[in-house]
Image 1 (cartoon, rainbow over the protein chains, first blue to last red):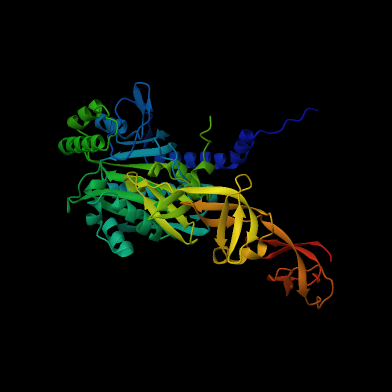
Image 2: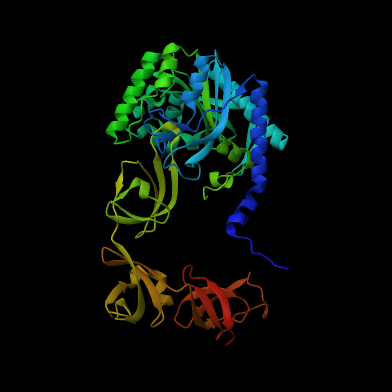
Length: 312
Length: 189
């Protein structure tokens, strides 16, 4: 009988099958939860004409359009059109982002709630993550990097508090200096976040809230949270900025920064601007890295271990 | 110059005039902010480690480092002399710099020498050398094959190490030059 030697590319996928099955279960669980909360799943194109001009995120270009870095602007257009609870699961692309926790192509869960706020969105987020753990493991806890993470509740810290406690620094002062905020976040804050539960960092200096609305009580901060689990940054959420004037100002300012940094100029997102002018209801929105959620729930510490290899 | 995006595990860089090798590397992008490249660096001269985070705009110096295969030639009384097998160019390394590696040098042995700015800063010997045991007490519990219990021994070049009980004077043994520890017995004396 003829025997063939299994090529490495086949062996690699074969060893991936168990985690691909878990991945499917997690996706299904998240969809069930969101559907149960009255969300509609939507799909918007991966190829877009005008990516959001964020300062540090690069969209790969593909012919005469770009690959989306997130479906944010398109989903906000759906909010303006009248949809109230929407989510999307699909690939997003970010040029040059590769590492143990980054892939230049990854799976995003992006979800929005109109007439809601970012703290309610946090409760919903926590509840579908807990449900996914329950569906996958039968219990409300996860084992990650040799540690147990309990999902009975989550920890919550303001960014200012976290910078004070863990780095003895002033978050607002750090935000004024190029890359200092990020450096302290990575070196001192993130490693010291509580590990035994999921942890939320809350309310960022304005500069770190591209599409977030200023907080009513303190307009030097924006309504934004980031959810961490096992040291992984899982999700980012905003109380969405729906003020067309501030939104235009920010887009122009980001565009200028990009120009100064020598980055590619993107066309203006005309359709999005029309929508925000027409009116987007007060909303909250979040983006969650699904590959990272799979990492967290399956105990894998490298994003390459939970997704189909980028080798085709 | 390297740009931060060139950094990766194993790359050799120069900081404040010292050569470093990147032993651990992680790409980060915290909170939608700028990308950061977190590195664990090992000083190639002192061996000490440190952490350093680089930003995308950072430039990093390229060190003038070169690895050369050379053979051990002779000891001139104060220094150990190594020669290039093709050019016969000689390089002297002090006993202090070699540390316990002086015990593992054998005439004509091929070694890898790392040069920084033209000066030798590190030497890698073949992983194992074979030497004769010159002195050791007979094993108290007889010729057992156990390697858990060890006793002191001295090799023919004066190097002292711990060996299993079954090793006798005159045996040929292998020593791991990276750790200086006994590896295995080659033959009985």
